[in-house]
Length: 306
Image (cartoon, rainbow, N blue to C red; front, top):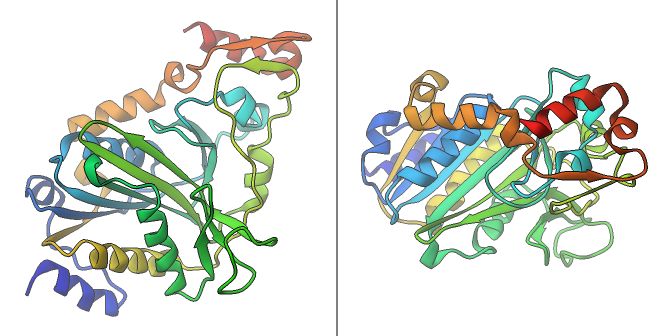
C-alpha cells in the first residue's frame, strides 16, 4: 500500500498515519512531504518552516501544519510600534512578539488558530492555488468559505455568495516568500481563536504620533470558523494529497526531534533576538518615543540601538 493510500485510511479513523520519522522523511527525496508539528513553540515552528524551505530539494512540494501558544507575529517589512499595542504586549509576558521571514500583515496566533504552510517550486507557484485548496478544505467541513480579491479566505453569510459580499468575514490571511527555486504560501486559520486579543493586541495606540518605514497591515472584519483543529488538519491533508498525487511521506513531528537540528536552532536564536524583532527604523514626531510609550520608552531606545 502506498503511503498516500495508507494516510487516507487512517484519516478516516481521525488519526494521522506517520509513514516516516523526521530524519528519514527529511532525507527521503520524496516529491511530496507532509509535516504536522506537535510543538506549540512559535520560535521552533517558524524556524522549522524556514529550515524545510531552505534545505529540502527544489523539486519537492511540502505541507507544514502547526499551532502556537499566544503570540503576535509581524511581517518581515513591518514596524512593531505601528502594528501592535506594544505597551500591552510588554505587560503581558505570556504573549510573545515575533517577526517572521515573509511579508504580509500582522497576525495573532493562539491554540485556537492553526497555521498552514505550502512550499512548491517557484516555476509552479501561484498565489491562488493553495488559497483555494484551503477554502475547499473548509467547504468539506460545511464552512461556506471562498477566496477574495486580496487572496484572503473569507467565511460567507451563506454558501454560493460572492467572496466580496457584505457580511463576508476574513478567517485566514496569507503571506508569501519567493526565491529563485522555491516559494511558499503560508497563512493562519481562525478556528476558535481569542478574537478579543486579536482586537486589542493588533491596534497601536501611537500610530498617529509615529512615522516609520514599513508596510502597514490592512484591517479586516474577522470570524472564527468554529472547526476543530484535528478536523481542519485532516481536511487540508486530504486536499493536498488530491492536488499532488505523487508518492507522499508523512511525519508527525515531536519537538524533541527537531529542537537540536542545527538549522532549527540557528533560526530560533535569530527569531528570539531583539535586533531582528525591532529591525525597522523608527522616526517620531510630536514628543517621540517617550510620549508614545511612557515608561516603556527606555526599552524601545535600547532595542533600536542594538
